[in-house]
Length: 78
Image (cartoon, rainbow, N blue to C red):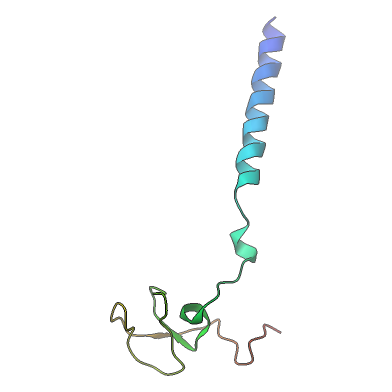
């Protein structure tokens, strides 16, 4: 009887681990869209609708734009 309880506990813990790991999406593979992520200059807070091809301030929060190190001039990563 003791072994059955141990096996049941192991199965329950394993199933919980599988359920938790499978429910979360893999966000590292998703690229962020919108000019607040893809412009040459972006707001550090990534306010919706912010972003520009030249330096300036975010119209939403007023923070200075910063150079987007991930910007690709032709839109491609290769």
